[in-house]
Length: 459
Ligand code: UD1
Ligand code: CA
Image 1: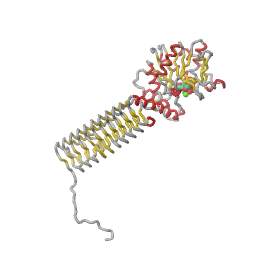
Image 2: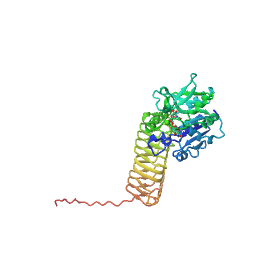
Image 3: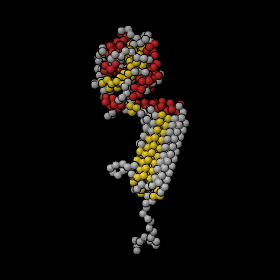
């Protein structure tokens, strides 16, 4: 499979998306639409990939910044698919081999299908192979016209087709394999004398056939693979197909997914064996989840590392956090960026954390805000504890050493350090450091006035 380059057509605006954002940058299971055909091209072995960009070219470039196998060709004006391929010519100067042409808005095509098409191309000694599908409703697509030997003679667009041609159900997917020498010489001869006034890439087939060169079709197994995304209905439909593929792969690898139709695991996420995922869970970004975890309904996890045997209860939201083994979280916990929970930590309901490290076996079981804090091992954080980390200008840290017991309703006015093995009495507002092995208590003394009665209004 040497000497393969890919051209991905992605210059169009995508008018039917009715969006400020260019179509190919709309997210689909964690990647922009155009990243899916890029992934397929890579998996097929394309050494260089030319992205033909036009509308919001900068957004596409920024997304792929630093990915050295990707070259960009700018098509300022979108004068047709043939013109788009011509724009890529400069980027492939000096290249000789097979060119795989993909569309930026056809995300479901599988690498195994492309590999089979390339194999067919080679076996048939073809100069052009076009990937086709048979659709009961071929409306809108280019139709495949064949000679009596079954070779492709030309492709006719819906708008240019004669009545009889419109009855043909074999359609052009817009995906091709073409010999580079032929491709760039044929592209140079294209004309735009058709119903849409565009330079049609499909016209290269007629020039090949006329010159006696072999053009063949390769039928795709599942028509859904060549489905284009033109509007948001198709975006949602493609999302369902991709999520099904992702979920099936994790289930076959040993993850239990209770309801795959209602489980949202993005591309790039990894999930371990014997982990169970309940419905309506969203896992995205650079997330790795270990083995034997239990993830309850309505949990949202983004960019997190989660160890083994972790329980994440209903309604918890976690972003950019590191969770070690045997931790329990939630229900309704909010772990914000920079949270690291060591082994056997317990975070209970209505606890919010941000930029904290919590040592082995420590607990914050209820109603607490812990921000900008370093908490040692075996620390108990009582209900209603607040780290007062922000003075209106700067953030300050709270340090709580090992084996400290914090009673309920305690405020730590940071910066403050609590020495190991100390006890902070309930209701205390801590404004000074506490030495190790001490009791800190700061409460207004209680006054009981005996015999006190509320005055009645009638008195
Ligand atoms: C094209 C094919 C048609 C096929 C269909 C499959 C031609 C002439 N027709 O039609 O036979 O059935 O795809 O979906 O090729 N693009 C550019 N620059 C341009 C024009 C298009 O980059 O100047 C890109 C678009 O952004 C899109 C892709 O090429 O990703 C296909 O273009 P589109 O206009 O959708 O082609 P169709 O008319 O649907
Ligand atoms: Ca299209």
